[in-house]
Length: 144
Image 1 (spheres, rainbow, N blue to C red):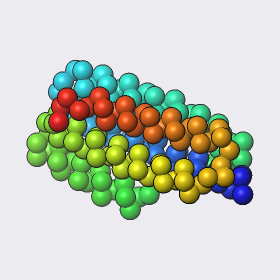
Image 2 (image 1 turned 120 degrees about the vertical axis):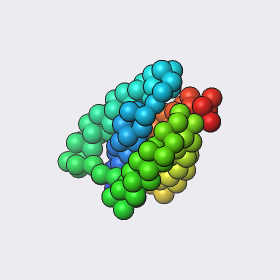
Image 3 (image 1 turned 180 degrees about the vertical axis):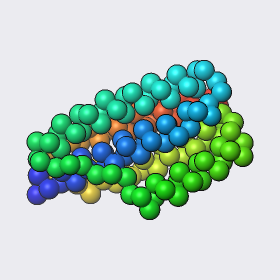
């Protein structure tokens, strides 16, 4: 039970990190404010660092991780591109990032509850990812 919950929680964190990095990559070309760009790039680097840690943990269990659900990711990418092409404002970017972070925090907390038997190391990673998502949302608040 412990190993199964640990791997499942780490997979969800892996998918979340990948979705976050992908989302930041999508909006960066449209960012106008340098402070916002710097914040997004910093958060992307933090996500990538945590992603490497998740990968290391998953390797302990001989698991390849999890890609974001394409049924969720593809429509989100299309909607993001459409919104950016229509307005392309920093406010739009801040709104989208805030919504994505809020969904991520909600999902990760749900997974923490669902996979309660996971190793503390995996739970700590999930909690740190939640904190990164909150930090990302807080940092874009001034652009809403």
